[in-house]
Image (tube, rainbow, N blue to C red; front, top):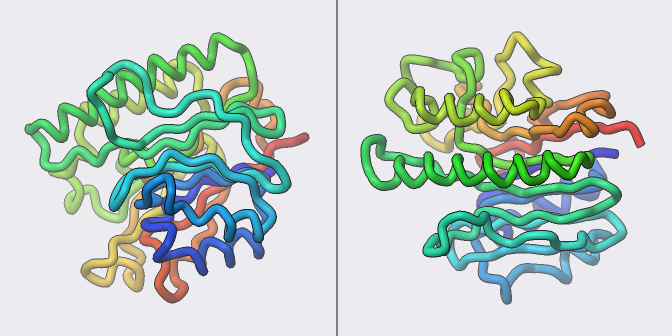
Length: 257
């Protein structure tokens, strides 16, 4: 079973690239972030024509998450992350699909540091950890997949110096991410590439893609029952180089059936 995460950076703008990737790689489950569309303008007919059922939590112009499943519609469990009733951002959706609990996550960026956006990021990560603990207690195979907007280790960026002041690499961001893995969630890509140097994001600016000046911020965290089934975890890097591509590449895990 292949479970993937893909920050699509605008599903309507990147729809040809998304359908192309679905057709060519055929993931069983695909978690999308930054769909940047309201609920009523999500291109569900195009997704269904590609052979996928879908659930989504949209927001006009920015944010937004979705879960796609090949040949079926995911059974929605939760829409929106609990813990802050006034939070109206569409950043979390959770479903049961093909015997696995899956969450699609678009964690706040947090820039600029030392301000309300960074404070919101840290509160959001605390809420995510609480939700992850609830899922953990169910003792089920689970995958928390998405754009975490966290560079966990120095080996996960092309330049520590270039990213040193960014919210993605602050000690508080890293500590919150490591609290999740410390709770027993397995960072799938890191487990397969312990030396690092594997990127999932390349900015559109400063010729980042041609220079391979990227970093790793898209992660799939596995519960113990999912981690026991892990056989591989990789990045579909080539899709970042295609015409009108997202600035992220798809990331996936393979789990034994």
